[in-house]
Length: 349
Image 1 (cartoon, one colour):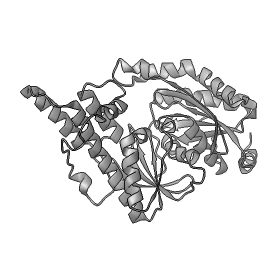
Image 2 (cartoon, rainbow, N blue to C red):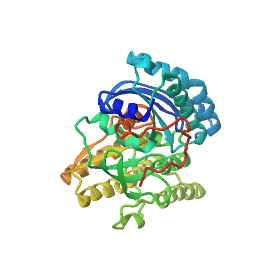
Image 3 (tube, rainbow, N blue to C red):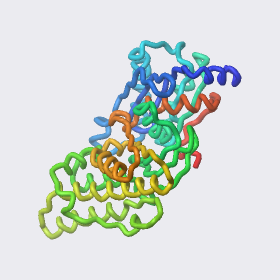
Image 4 (cartoon, rainbow, N blue to C red):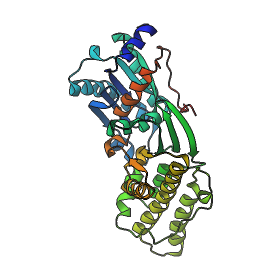
């Protein structure tokens, strides 16, 4: 389809997109109308495949995507009661992520776009996570502030407009989700570690141990979780070497509380200082109940509106890609069949 025709489609507003997400260990497809209405959201999780290895194995992830993507796309279309011909465009995650996994989704989306003569819309994975809030809160409009917390990213982003982002803060080392996973592993918890650590923390005392971090006490908006992680790991190892027993529940609860205090404290302070009346939460770690409640309480105390997606839209899914893809389509951000996976793709900061 010619560029002029693509823009005409985008200007109609009532556009229905087929979206594909395969950046890591979830094979997902969704049908989304006008960026806000989810007609279907199909996800195949690979967690059982990677659980025995204690983490995601890229080669296994890629192979599983190849095996499942056709069925997942078909399921999304069937759930929506739509055909490929009825789609106005195809949106796909082109980065960041595992290069092999991304290539499966990108290649499949290019094939569909070519066969059905549909515009192809590349979407940044983190932009998708941010856009999950647009689905959950139909009245949400930029500008707003967003805390992105996931296994690979910890960002404070000012969403100035659709597709316009300003990076205010970022992690200097481990992301919050990565720190959760590493501490969970030392505590003997199975993969995926973050949700397991949260479960364990429910039976613990969040004030039993102190994990201070001088870097995070600064006036800047950047994060550092490496020191917290190392402190927790050393606590466990030292106790084991001395033959002492310490409650894993207390370590999990205290570590979780330390991470929540840092993320929530900086995000709410950034919203106040930047004059943003709305603070959003996004990313896989956004499914953590302690973080959601910690942010909600702090935001309410500061007179700031807090929003977050339901938990099923926090983890990787294609509905969020469809939401972001719609607004990219409105701006005419389509691409050709030379689109390639970009594992290090930046969000345009």
